[in-house]
Image (cartoon, rainbow, N blue to C red; front, side, top):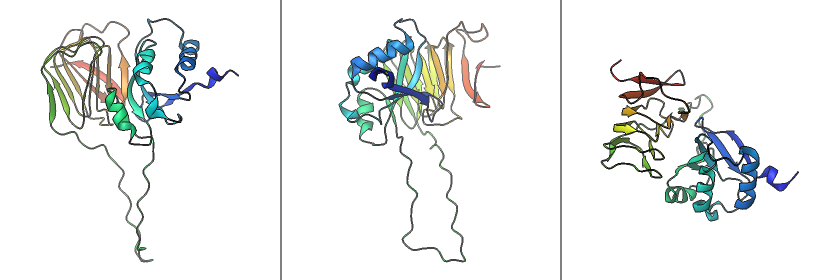
Length: 242
């Protein structure tokens, strides 16, 4: 088996996105492996991926400035960087990516044991922190730009162009045409929603459940005010006012 055959793996990610698990930092080798897997055409539909670099020996030294456009040309849009070390959060931010840890948090331990006749209290299940406040963007979001509202809603007062991307941990409100990509509830908030004055999106996502718009949207929402939300783990797109 050639080294290129083991250059990367694709597996399910924790936010219902696919993860691109890199097994080499040799970008020439990776490019050949991607072409062998996906072909060399440039008309592939864009898919959102988590970029997992845990298997690399020196992920902070990877040439992301070359890697990200190389993936994008093949229809792979990296939206987040995954690694157990939070030191990679700065690298993710530098290249406009969200950061997610692949490490499992250790259980807390008490130095003093509980009495034998007193059962230990159950640990509460972790829940996504609610988004608070809002980031307001009053200028058009151009192709190639990415806006991320960390821990809050995102309000965009101008057009989101094709090829642009807006991400929020909370809701996304776009009071103009949405022609690019919108990802709400980025940290797992399944109650988040996307509101667009004119629905013309390339991709929409709620809490990692996403849909690429590969075919014409129905007349009921195309170019019209639309809301997008999750219902029974499926994306629902309806005209506002219905």
